[in-house]
Image 1 (spheres, rainbow, N blue to C red):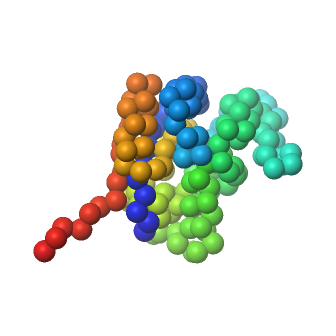
Image 2 (cartoon, rainbow, N blue to C red; image 1 turned 180 degrees about the vertical axis):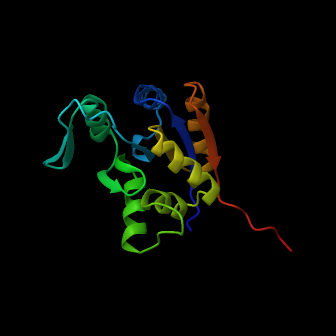
Length: 177
């Protein structure tokens, strides 16, 4: 398990997550520290596609403007088909954590690949299970990673956007004996 400071917000809609990203950007938060995870389950009436265009991934579908805009702003992007969750779109540094968990066979008992990536960042397993449930129920996870000061600043900004849930995760300091 790593020791990463992070604030994780759960949004019921991509519009809520998008509003938070815009507020973070306006406030000067480094967008390279942001990650977002979500699904677009409303594909039955729309053609959906994912493709590379040079160094950027493109999304074609109902929420194409949302994902396409994020992939242009955030560092890294990926599409995963996660058993038990379904098709998941990911942008930001959390992509590397998920891939690292998959490559290192660090999938923790009872967690999906996304959950293993979050757990390897230092997010407690009980919180990871809540985040996996949020993804299964079509919510969006927005994360900001960084120093304790950066995460605290981001938390204040995110709180003003009224997420469904908001939690700060910090490394646990061992008690001195």
